[in-house]
Image (cartoon, rainbow, N blue to C red; front, side, top):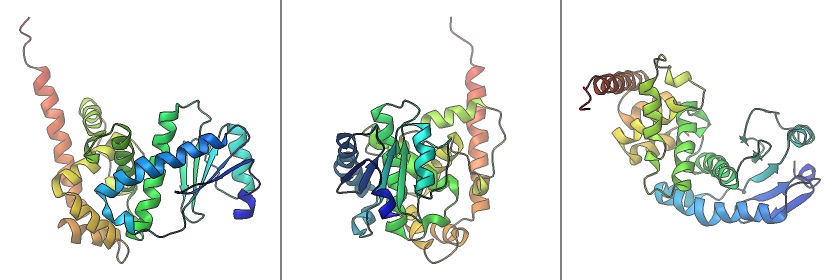
Length: 256
């Protein structure tokens, strides 16, 4: 992989990774990503998950791609899976983070994507085999952390929760089965927020650590004291409650 990456037009050796860009990406842009991850993202994540300070793994290769054609070309040359619909991807086995700006995203959005994928990388190396996590929790953690940093929140668990619960309350969509759910949407944000609000950060960290030595289901039961099915029932009940509150509020007569 390294010798293939060296064929990319732009390269910057950074503190938090080796950065590579296609012909439309500048070295200054790559340095900006590294400064953001090193000076903003890493310190903030360390306040929530001190375990990341112990990570000694080789930093990831972080690739920034600017166009759809470039994405197709370089994923082929680098033998990476091609996901044209993805904004960003973390290839754990290859130790590669891929960011794409082909959809004319703002700099702020691109930095948020970088924080999201870097959170995945840190969690995997800080807690062991978090690749066993269900998608809703794996992605939920990364979404919350990245947006909390973007919005400069001290509590990373609240960043996207309010709008996600509002979306759920206003919909009539059936509650998904969380453990097998793979979409990245309001459901995973709300489910992650509720888990941490109910059981706390320490139990979440314990769960992440336990997944290195046992199944995610067994780790969940040991860390939180309930099974995934029992948490599903609690989540279903909370969704019903939120929808009931919305209906009750709508029925309050207007004073005007």
